Length: 379
Ligand code: SF4
Ligand code: SF4
Image (cartoon, rainbow, N blue to C red; front, side, top):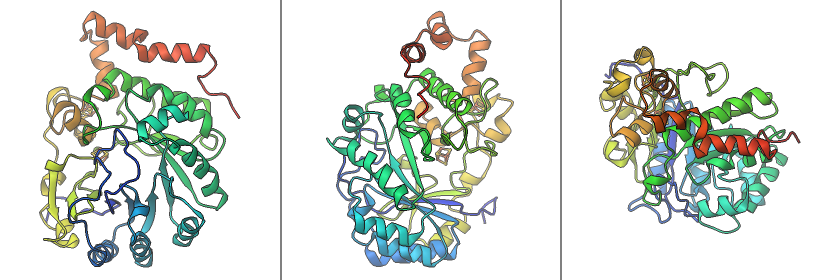
């Protein structure tokens, strides 16, 4: 057995890599189906294994989930096994039949992506004209059908300044909004499109400002796991009432690719695959030693090695650490780290200036505020 007897709280399962969009930041470079995706029979077996483990919650996603003909059979099997369901879709293929199917599944949430506050930016990122209009229509149709909706915004340098516009679309509608950073996975995202640590800090400030401006009922906005920790200046940006306890990959979180390969978290690069559900059962994988290295304390490096929060935080989000520093246990996109290095005079003059507010990122806050776009107007 691994060192920690783990409960699988959240399994993210990519049912297919087929997708009708071509999003620039897609970590899986979705488009065509993966070679040798799980057959319908194999997918139902995995669903049964998830139910018997049991997994508390499974997020079904793609590619685009609706392009896999047996998506509903898999979702139904999970629900019949008592698993909580989250369905992630780009919402461009929603129709009355699929909305009825979703209602029958009684999902905890329908997640959909919104990467811009206007069609020009969203459609450019999503690689398809008309995607924005369809997603915005779904944000009306799904709640009207009684389905709980969450919007996920994946930040790159292409849409950082769209945050006020997206907030304007969402405020007052009770739609949960999760903001996350694009990682380095995927072939369509240029490395220069990744947020710099200071742009990351800007986004964190934005989330904190929205939470101070609006009540949870008006704009339930959170930063995802990858969104900064242990700040001395900003409140925790995750779910209210929770605290950051370190990366849960392989401990309470698991990712399954459409070909049955498993990672401790689906956001991690493919060289961190730990096994294949064609070769090992999910129960054996989860309860045996396969994930042992993910359940030991993380060996921290760099700034994280000496951090006073390190024993709990363990070096932040593994996906971000691997993206930005190439190793686990050393996440440069950490609010605490950015603040501390600045406070200790550890940045050169240009970087210090950036942190204090003259970068394009923080200048944009001022410009948008002056123009009335920030914070977004109440509707
Ligand atoms: S410096 Fe590293 S260990 Fe410390 S809070 Fe930030 S990510 Fe966590
Ligand atoms: S790698 Fe990041 S996103 Fe994945 S479980 Fe860990 S903290 Fe969460």
